[in-house]
Image (tube, rainbow, N blue to C red; front, side, top):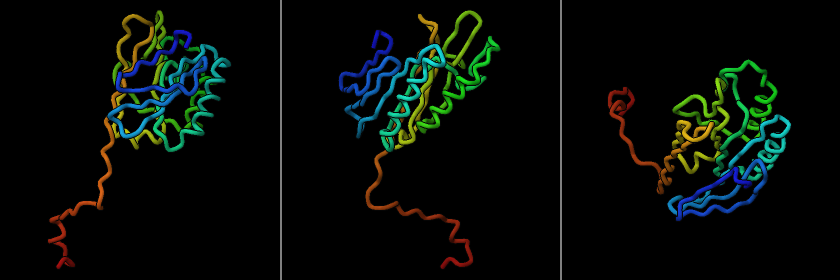
Length: 191
């Protein structure tokens, strides 16, 4: 999309674009070794508060149809979520942070946290966490663990994000296994 959002997929995967708007590319990703596809929304947010309003509205409309479906939202939001996501400036970004927080809450997205460097963007003496990955509530139905790592900035003022997930085990058939707990043998009512 305008050379700003690129999605690369393994040759055994298929990404079907469902929405391709200026601030966001959204679609279904089918991976051969996963039991079901998941949805991916890649974001490139505008630099102005007002310019991000269409992005928040589009995410809200996508969230309405993502109920119960694994959904990953990530990219450059060009805004921060918390005051701790910024260092080197005292400008008031409170309204932008509220907009972002409300969009996350309305879409029922979860920030899984991160490892690595605290900030994903730097310019002169200003450092910010503008890039992040968020997951929908149903993400855990396909993936048990999520680990997001902020990689170092190399050729850009932005650092890349690496997300590693552990696939959820298939549910067992035939009920739960029998477990004997030795503590019951010492209980007065145990026969």
